[in-house]
Length: 304
Image (tube, rainbow, N blue to C red; front, side, top):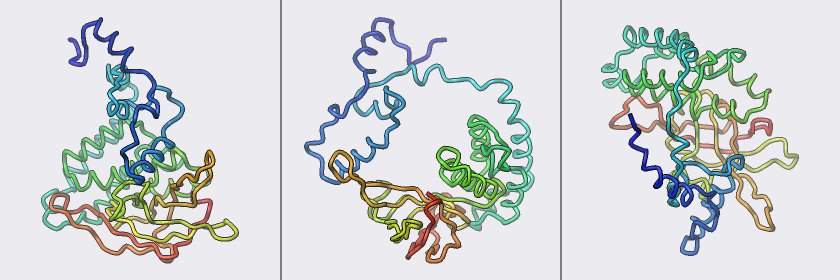
């Protein structure tokens, strides 16, 4: 059966040559952009993965280029990898059916404490964390299968588990953390200590170029002092540790100051950090979303 993405051979050849070339900055007209939008674009372009000269599939769509070879055929999960996830999925499905009441969670706006404990015992908070750090060491594909199962049963629990592992401490550390950071934090979050991600601000949304929460280095450079406020911090109400995005002093690049955004690992018990209040929603009524205040919160440099 042909994919709906397939086109006649000649058309594919013509479109490929015209539309899959490497994107360049000249493809985007910035002449009518405001200063803020230009800075946001420059920051995004500076962060683009330099290892792939084709650019990302999604970003190319915005400038009229596409490369369907990157998304079709969809990669199939191997039988071996699929089998590795069956134990978790079986335990998770049984636990959800026997112990998680979606109606009660919706009525009360709370996930019962025993559900946090039960999910931790199954290993649901450390699905992708390597076994040497106390996790299950499963693949992204098996994590996706678990997320589908959670979401089919209760969206609140799915949000709790997925935010904890996809944007909370675990994934950034697996991708960019030092070995010392992994040894310190991964066993904690894999064992059930909840983590959260703090990016959004009330005036800036999720645009890092207009972020105002700042992190200033101390005179000796050993610490950074964070001041500001974060909004819509999912899992923030229950979190023990956060990933916080903050503006740090600019660097001189090509003779011009370039804004810098830095990710910090911040323990919630750090003096000056306050979970100001919980944000409530019409849909996910048990979402543990928070406004987080930072007042002279000192974070060691090694937590970058």
